[in-house]
Length: 289
Ligand code: SF4
Ligand code: SF4
Image 1: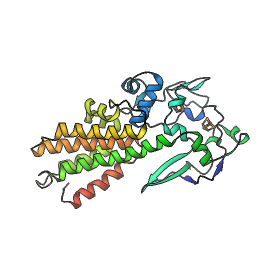
Image 2: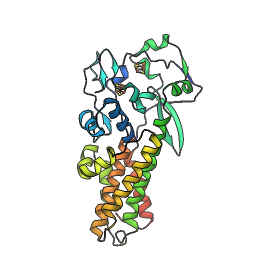
Image 3: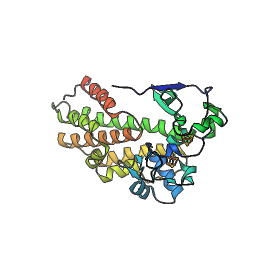
Image 4: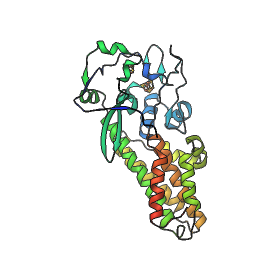
């Protein structure tokens, strides 16, 4: 697969990181949000997370709509961008916006800061940044108050893995895998290849709400995600704890893997490669496809 060229950064890397505030990156971009970010943004807008999701998000609540006025390059503004003013939720803006033009990737629990391409992204549209003060990456991150947002993002990766583990248990610790079932892994793979819109219709509104707009009123990011993790586990137990037949275990494992995949999309992870890995693991424990 073609990998986009990236530039790796260290906290000491010095870059023209003082924003010109022209809003170039608030047009024609992609901003993924996790459920805690959605909660904070909605609070900033003084509406409920569900209202915000329905009004301003797409792909089942994991991405901000970019359906505002087009800029001179013909690129549509973020739904939260106000022409001549800037971001309408500046204090509650999500991690992706706090970090831009820096990106953050987590591999084997190692965090790496990067920027896309060989040349600094802001130069494409805001070249005047070259005349503004330069900052180290470390100084920039501190100024963006990204800590709590990074902690939430990393914790949600754990929630994703916890959900995957439950999908495994429903397949392997029941009589389902032993029965020679091939349907469950086939559906895991199919879901990993589907668009988020299609996946959302498969999961259903009740589960989507539990995943994307949980009823939690908590300011601290880690406590929020911790509570969310618990609520999801309680709901799964309530709904599927009494499963008895292979058909019921199949349905349960597929729904929980569907939630896992939808969360993976929202976290910017690659569901297809994750699911291939999980299918191989399940097969090594006796599941079939
Ligand atoms: S592209 Fe860079 S300089 Fe321009 S508005 Fe975005 S962050 Fe600021
Ligand atoms: S949320 Fe705010 S900072 Fe982020 S893209 Fe939208 S308008 Fe820009």
